[in-house]
Length: 570
Image (tube, rainbow, N blue to C red; front, side):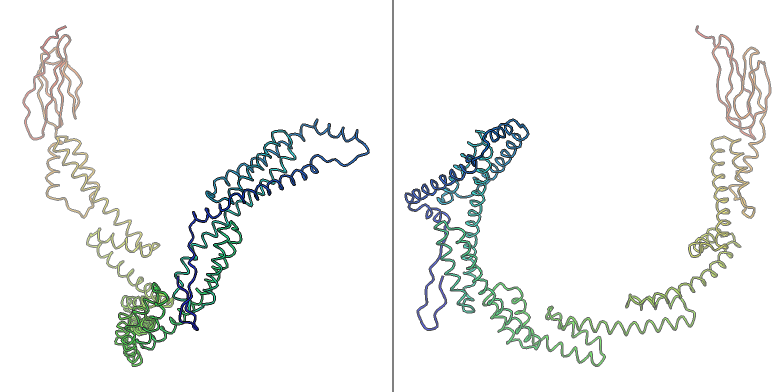
């Protein structure tokens, strides 16, 4: 990546290109394996000797005592106490389980190919083996101390791995950001140069395995780039503000120049791209806004609104155009509100309540927040309702007078909805309801009686017809069809004389509207009401005789012979 040219020199300085390859980094960490192995072995030996000395004083050294027998007795008591022994085992096992989990997690960390981290992990494994050995020998106190030491090593190892990953991530980010800020380095060249130096140091520390120092340098390099980033943002912000001022003044060329500077540093700046498009029409928008303002001042609101909308259509981002549309719409609304309110007041004075409500509603639609208009509508509605109640009651009474019960009931229902406690409405609704139900019952029973008569159930039809007549209002005349039915049923209410002939030994019975008990006869005459009948003849040793007959009023009935003369087979 090329550096900024020195103003005092024509030949530009060259930055060292810092390329980072994780594989190369890991290979670099493995340089001079013999020396590193030697130093590593020496360090491990010193650590082991130190731990041995400390362990001796902690777990084996006993200060002189004047009472050796008491000390021996105390030791024996401790071994004999199962609760204390159990606590030692439990504590040691808990520490061991925790270290096992942490070590397993450490083994999964990405350290392949990095000798420094690999040696640290090997050392941790060795220390862990020693702790496990102490645990297996029931030397729990020393095992706990050793596990705690391993835990600290694991924490250090984990932190180093994290620092390595963070440093590598910051280095990758640096390479990307430095390229993005190349076009803005002249705004803060000192910080731009410093960032490269710090990143170079950070890369060296990464290669040598000093990951904490590498992370520090890369964070410092990132902060230096932040300073360049801030200078770039300030430059963009300043030119954008200037461009916006030129747009407001209708200076298209100047605005275009300002936003072009922004886009030279930030080609993907969406706001600058949008404002650049606005800059191209700034002069046309300015002219439309001037015309709109002149008409607004002359109270020509519709014309002013047209110019404001024209400006808004040319430049949808124009705040002046948008606010002008809103302001003129408000003035038009206030004018129309005043006209509707005045018309409503006039209608109230002339008792034209519906017109008043319509105009009040038009005014309220313009300004829904006007609670006084809502109150005026409620008052006009109350006066209109009272007037409507009187009108409806009068009309309902007129409908009742001409027996138009349906129309009257509909008006009474409207009145009940308007005024639930209005006695005239409730009484009228009950009264018309009774009349309508009576008429409906009458019509229904007439239809039922017709059906029964058609099925030759004459006696049942007669009873149904009588019920219909009871339900019919007195004023309602019987229809022509109803009159025919009445006459027909009257005829069917008269009994018909029927002659029955038998053999004197057959028991004959009659089942139907007129019942006859079984009796023997050679010949007899009976009076039967019209309807359906069954004639039954029975004789011992003979098959029963059973057949139906239909008796109709006004028609002569032929003699009927009933004789059981077919013997049974058994």
